[in-house]
Length: 158
Image (cartoon, rainbow, N blue to C red; front, side):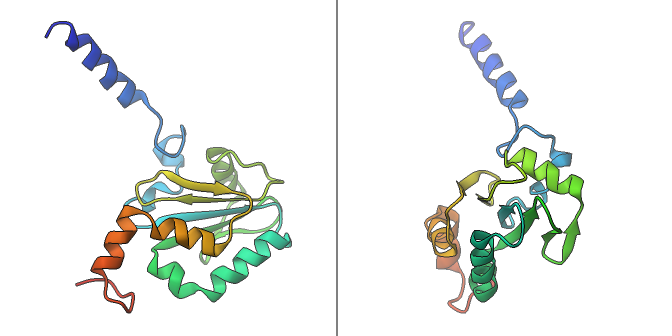
């Protein structure tokens, strides 16, 4: 028993000192923390809104709003050059840069990051399509429960 106490103390110390599941920034800097356990977060980083890969994904997101809503997705559109947004909300350059740092994305880089409801990064890619994202989300255990428990029309269960 005496031998296990130092090991348990060390594990607890490491667990309490460990960074958040998404990154090492403080919770106050984590733009995504407020969505934890309620929404999945999709961060689309692009150097510019004119980038063809971004335009393709943005077009698919717009055309598939029902699928986005059904999967409880909150979408951040983050640009190196241009106005970054979270829905209708315009994000400051500082908030955008904080997200870039948190997810290790350069201003001239295109990357799509999917964060699960648990706050963990589920996918990070520079070549993902909306279909790919939906497949990843639909394979998640929490999403499978949602599909089982929600009515087929996508409305919240009662």
